[in-house]
Length: 478
Image 1 (cartoon, rainbow, N blue to C red):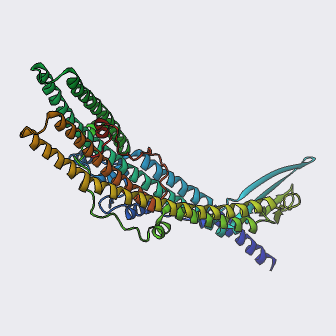
Image 2 (spheres, rainbow, N blue to C red):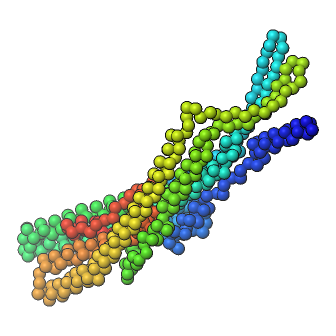
Image 3 (cartoon, one colour):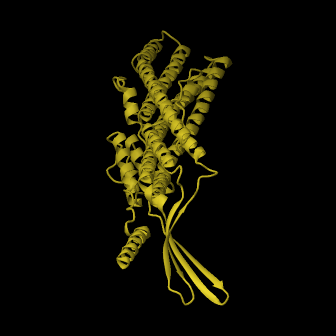
């Protein structure tokens, strides 16, 4: 009977050690990169989503992608596949996966060896011990690490989506600046022709010095506007290049469309935007999982409040000319000085903090969506008035003035004044269209995550200028 019991004890020890040494090791968590890729694609417009996982393009594929003018959706796809920051964020997610896997491993057994001497006699001691608290609380730790990994996945997806929307904003501004520069060149050509006409009319006595100085001032303002437009064009294009992750020959190969997309007939409907944001925003979803993690942490702390160090051991002692002695040991930390009260209080306070942070984030999300929607609605109204009212009227005035000038019913000064007013109207119309598409991008971002920075540079939406024709043309986006 004693031999049978000893055999069962040895068998139990063997099984315990086998489990601790990895016989029942935890399998690695499911890779997060495909999940993040699918989640990002689900929230991007259909044209901007990619069915392939993010991987850098080869040189040949990159040249093919840049062979045609790059639209907004293609720019987003290229940025999510090409930029090193995107891949660095995915690798950081891999680090979180490895940490979660490491935290769920079975505890390793401990080995202790001792050598004792008494006179000339030597004795040896050996022991194996196993952390029972970590083993018993493993299900709770699994809940904690699973919630932590889920929150990290959603944070990674939110950062990638912020990068995508920052790329779209950079694309809008680059296309707008390029068209403003092109239009300012036309203004410059007209100003040079006007200055040349003034010089000739002064030569034949039809212009005085004051009139010619006014035309030269218009030429100087047009030149200044062209220089500013070219500066803005280069800056916005370089910003887009950084967002796309291009370098070398691909920078010069980048082509952009001539114009921004036309203004839609109606803006998107406003109904249900707040509920949609609360349902789909990744930062709110990540905050929910963080709250779940804090709740699991609190349960874990309460479960180990009185017993946070418990080890089971198997000992062997062999003395000189004596049979080997075996036995079991159970070590327990006595909560005499530290009753884990501070740890429990900290876990409860952290749980309450996460709950209030989630409530504050929901309030912020509602406000951000309302603000972005109102900005979009107003931007659509302003752009529509520019397109349908102001610009046609300015064009009609210019045509009427040209007819009267050809019939010698008005002078060249009135014709030039109306031409300058038309220049400002065109520039303001371009500004309004750019503001609309930037507002649309901001609303899309507010619906899926916080518009906060994620490594991309913040870009402010331009405002229509009314100071001078040249300045209006410079700040125009279309």
